[in-house]
Picture 1 (cartoon, rainbow, N blue to C red):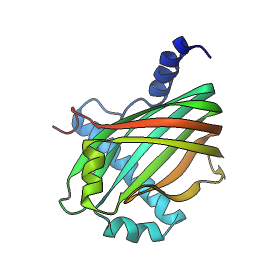
Picture 2 (cartoon, rainbow, N blue to C red):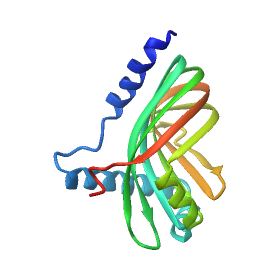
Picture 3 (cartoon, one colour):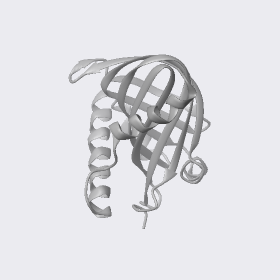
Picture 4 (cartoon, one colour):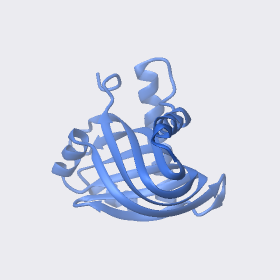
Length: 187
């Protein structure tokens, strides 16, 4: 795949994910909080122990992400919210990812980050960068397929649960993901 195809691939991922629905910042925040609550409800049904881990952590983040991978290039995008359990503050964030490696597919998933200490939560909301290598196979369509891959230790003091919503993907990639604060929604 030629380098000039990278931008259209990234653009396609962002078009698929869009952003939180609503015309106003308040409507978009409400949509994100609804996605968060629905995702946590699913997670607690799949992994009941996650409830205690999240409740006793410094905080957590819930993100929606759609990724596209075609041959050697992949891209994804999404949005979510990070909640500080100590202060009760929500920080609304966006995300984008790009990667190289063999793969083919489209995957819609939710990610729930659990931050064991305040310094990790602050680092994530301030820096918001994750670079990782991953091998992944996921398949789900509506109520068919495996919906949970378990919690993964993604960095010191940060755990991630992934719930696949829809899609089919087979990939082995080196991928970078950037998370950043949404300036409109954090006013």
